[in-house]
Image (cartoon, rainbow, N blue to C red):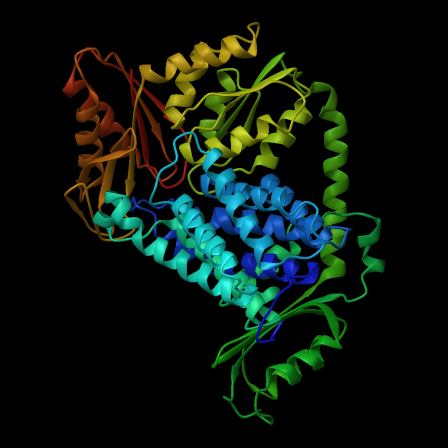
Length: 568
C-alpha cells in the first residue's frame, strides 16, 4: 500500500490494521497505565485495552471468510468477549459500530471507512449511561468528524487517515481542558491515548510505513513476556504427547551485539533471523541497537547458541527440554482429572439465583463464600475480568438467573455486556468496592427473584462507607494535595482524603474521617503485607475513637492494599 493515492482497503489490509493496533497497544500498555489519574498502584487502562484488542486480533486471524465485513464482525466479537475494564468495553463498542457499518463490505473506500468511524462514535456514546467529554469518547467523536470531512472533500484513504490520526491527537491533547482533574494531575486521558495509538496504527498500515514485524511483535516488549503468552494455556492433549513434539528444546539466547571475542559477522536482522527460522519454530527475534533476544523451539540448541556467538557476546542462554516438561504436564493433568472425577459429585449445585463476585485475595474470597456467593471470579484492582469470564462462569453454573457484584467501577461495563450474551436473566449490582460487595450480600435471598435480589442488594450499598489504604506510585498534585511517590494514601469512597508518611497514622486518620454519630461497626480487612503490630494498633485506635464501636478484623490476603476499611 505505497501508491501516492490509496482508494481501497482490502480484507488483508484490514487484518493488518487490526493486528498492528493490537501490537501497538501491547507495546505501550505500561505507558498508558501510568496515565492513571490517581497515583495508586492499580492503573490498568493500558493493560485492559491491550488484552481486549489482542482478543479482537485473535478472532480476526481465526476468521474463515475473507471480506472486510466478515473480518470486522470477527474483530468486534473478539473484542467483546475479551473486553476488560471500562476502557476495553468502550473500545469493543467502537469496533462494534465499525462492524455494523461495514457488514456488507468486501473492500473499503474512504467514504466507507469514514461512515464506519462515525457509526463507531455513535455506538460508543450510547454504550455509556452518562457520556463524559475529555475521555476516549471525545477522541473517537473528533476522529470520526475529521474522517467525514475528509471523505466529503474527496480525499483518498491515505490523506483521510493522516487527518484522522492528527485529529485524534489534537482531541487527546485537549482532554485536560475538558476534565479538570486531568489538568490538575498533568496527564491526558488514558483511554483516549489508547485510541490514538489504534488510529495511528491504522494510518501506518495504510501508508505502508508499518513493518511486517510490528504486525506480530510488540515494539520494546520483553522477550519473557511474549514467551509466556506463547506458552500460556497449553494443556496436555494427544497432539502434545512428548513423542509428537517436533522440536524438543525451548531455547532462549540474548546476545550483546558486536561485543566479545567470538564476533565474526556484522549484525543484520534478516540474515540473523533467516538462519534461526530454518532451525525450528515458535520463533521470536527482538533487537535494538545493542542487544538481540531470541526464543525458538529447536532440535539443535547448540547451533542456535553458536550462531548467536558469531554476532556478539552471549549474556543469557536458557535451554529447556520440552518433552520432559510436557510429560510432567500430562502426569499432573491426569492427577487433576482423577481429583475432579472424585469431587464432581461433591460440587455445590447452583441456586436459582447465583451470585458471582469479583475479588482478589484468598481471605476475601472466603468472606464472599461464607455470605452465599456461588463463585468468586478472580480479579479487581489490577486484573479486571473480561466479559467472557462472566459468561463462562454463568453458563457453567447452570443457574436459572445470576447476580454480578463487580466490586470495582472499572468492571461495570464488562459485567453489563455479559447480560446480553447468556440465555438466563442477569442483573448487575453496581458495587464499587469489596466492602460494598460484602454488604450487598446482606440483602441476598436465594429464594427471591433476580429482580428482587438486585433491588434489595443495591439498597444495601448506601449503608456502608468504604476506605482503602495504599501507597502512591508517583509524584502528583490532586485536589490541592501534594503527593510524593511512596506516600501512604487514605481513600474514602474513591476520594483521596489523607496523605501521610506512615501507614498506621494514615489508616487511623482515614478511619476517623469515615465515622459519624450513627456509626456502629468498623470492619478491617487486612492485606497480605499488613503487619501484626499495625493490625493490633489499628484495632486499638477504633476503641480510642469511640469505645461503643464494634470492631471486626478479617484476613483478606489482598495485594496492594494493606487495609480495607468499612464503617456501617
